[in-house]
Image 1 (cartoon, helix red, strand yellow):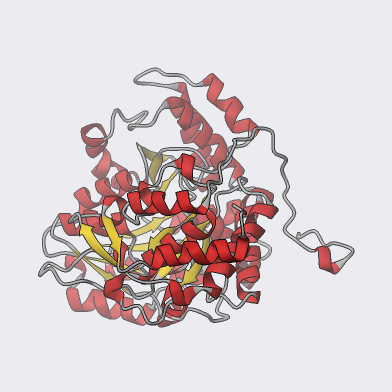
Image 2: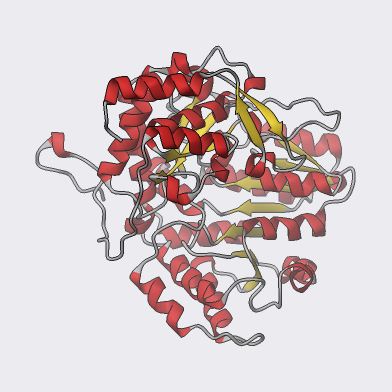
Amino acid sequence: MPVKFYQPENQVPLEMHKVRIVQKLNLIPVEERLRAIQAAGNNTFLLQNRDIYMDMITDSGVNGMSDLQAAAMQVADDSYAGSETWNRAKAAVKTVFGVSNVLPAHQGRAAENILAETFVKPGMVTLMNFHFTTTKAHITRLGGEVIELVDKKGLIPQTDDPFKGDFNLDQLRQTIDEYTPEKVAFVRVEAGTNLIGGQPVSLENMLAVTDICHQKGVVSVLDASLLQDNVYFMKTREAQCKYMDTKEIYHLLASRFDIIYFSARKLGFSRGGFIISSDPKWTQMMMEYVPLYEGFLTYGGMEVRSIEAAAQGLLESLDMEYISQGPEFIAYLVKELDDYGVPVIKPAGGLGAHLNCSEIVPNLPHNQYPAAAVGAALYIAGGIRGMERGTVSEQREPDGTERYAELELQRLAMPRRVFTLSQVKYCADRVKWMYDNRELIGGLRWVEEPKVLRFFFGRMKEIGHWQEDLVAKFREDFGDSL
């Protein structure tokens, strides 16, 4: 239940935890921020942490761990095989999901690699509500194709729809029939669509997808990396889930999907990854790839202390007071930005707030990479590092032409239990300043473009001198302030 304040003007998200360890942050002067972003090739991934004040690039592996997680790390069993740490991890998965068939991987994309190696053959298709960057890369690397079947409501930037990540069920049926079940490697539901604003999927829609898969004889897969956010939205937005226990929702999903995988960097607030199933035939099909790519079956490339922390974190993901902190802080930031008139994806989803860069810089074409330009501008404005989730995050077509993103977003991730409310308000303030000076923001062009996952380590150069103009305007408005 949310905590109501007596004075309505004081209503803010209330943390149900206290801070016990802190890390010093740096906020360097705006002129140094300009030099840093240009030296990084306008790629926020290439910035150094010492030059960042608010790191909102991801919530993966950077969440604040609980005291119980830190304590659990001290009892890790580092045996190569037969580790008690792995037994405790399997017990946590059994408690949370109700299944016993578990494979380890060093993180979520490693689990995706194992899935792709097992099921994807040249000429096959995988059907998704929406793709994720690494998921698509693993599939296309093996000669497969990704087809996105998110309902059209998911691509509308601002609506009141509570579940914009839902599959279009009619299209799902039609597409399976068109390609035939034999050509469908699997159907993947991303519970919290990363590239279209962290928008959740309803329980009703997920169960309908599994029904269709079972009827058609197609493998159903759930990417549960953002499931705890999705469960929060199910509990708060979906009538049938209001009185369901969180564990009941997890167990129901695990009983209906053939395979579930997730990154423990997100679900579990630790490191590592897991692949689970209620039917051992699926994990047995994938088992041989774990020692081949990851490590032995009782650690799978994970460091044992991280496994202990992940096991405890999984248990904590059943607690609504824990899983509510992220979505509520994100909703607060989205409301602040929306009240300022900044174009932002609504309703607030999981993972973070998402700036709609097509509206912030409407005159910048896709091939000048508006979302990346906004990310560079925001770093200059406030030392805030976000992540481009637009055309730069796509990959070129086989013929070399640019694939333009459905949405040009700058994601401001909200690591759990990391930022204070004053820092969130600072972020909103600096985004507002950047938006008010949006006419100064220009485009970017490639100078170093990798062929795969270019958003991680590619480099771009600003077109013209708009960044210097932005710095001059900052000094005009803020004087000698940082």
